[in-house]
Image 1: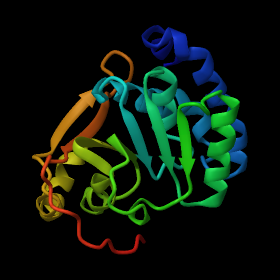
Image 2: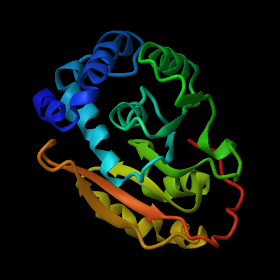
Image 3: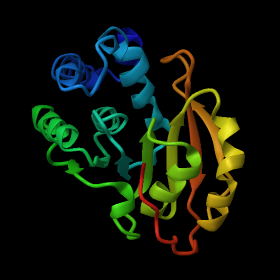
Image 4: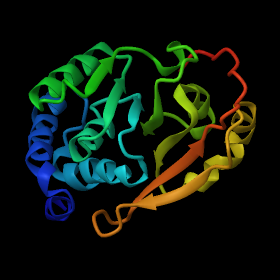
Length: 217
């Protein structure tokens, strides 16, 4: 898997390797990843995240909600030097890790860490693309994340093969937010197997302001 991502993103492979080493050591020590994850870092985490760049416009600002250990935000920043990335993470130990990772990888000029919950950031858009990976069911996620996207921006939710099963439950939240019809997309063919499944939701240009958000569980 490292070979496949190195062929796709040769200029980023050294930085991705440094990040993988950080995840496999400090990330595991601090409980951000389970002890079995280092063996599948490239396939399950790095490549799975990096290939989402196929859906991100040039020179976009990406807001990574519930960033955790920096996935997918940090791999996106590493493979796409044209992007600016905001890593949104509420937990102190994770935000401390993210700040250290950004410094170690030399991303401080393009990547910002915000210790906050998405629903506490207000309704002012922060970027053209909002990403989320393994954060919450789509029904709740759209209410927290989509308001952070600029009008005509998008939310990209990394999901598993059961993504289509979440769409009916999210229909009411999508309608309330004035979102477009969600699309289930796959990216990374030839790099990850199976390809990464992403639910893409567009924010309409004249979307209504979101209602007050409930507290996250």
